[in-house]
Amino acid sequence: MDTQPRERPQRIVVRRSRVRAAVLGSLSLALCLVAIRFAWGADVWIERLFAGSMALFLGVVAILTILLAVDRTPVLELDEEGVIDRGSLVRAGRIRWQDVRRVEARESGGRRVLLVQVYRPQRFAADLDPEHRRSAEELIQRYGTPIVIPWEALDRPLDQVVAYAEALRRGMPPASDS
Image (tube, rainbow, N blue to C red):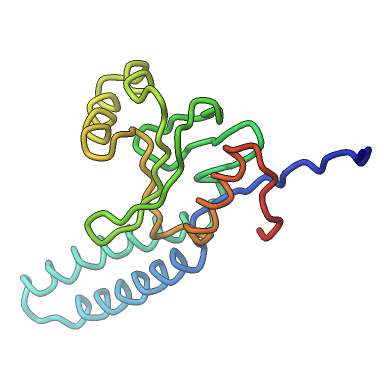
């Protein structure tokens, strides 16, 4: 008889990749500076207008991507109670494991996504505001679930997260490789 207290599974937090956002922000900033330099030396007004608008656009992109690199808000959290979704269009919040039928990775249109298949997907869509409800219903038609999280800019391997989530869903202690 094992009298050792059972170890609680570790909580997994998935965030946006800082490296990817920082590289995109730096590249946008560098191109913004090149556009400013070009606008400064242009002789024709149309070239100045084009280079100025390009510099403005790239400056906004640089600021937004650098802010994303600094943002450490979790996109997805997994623990023994369930999943906390902040990365899908629906932003479902806490989903308990008893409501989850399956967690899977899928490739769609060349992009990898995480699908959290729930037992009653229409229930999630019914509680949303009209704009999010429309998006949720489209996702249900396409994937069978409203919780679809694009994975290209996140900081953990998708297959590792799927294996961990499935182990938690089944109530088995997941492997401790985080």
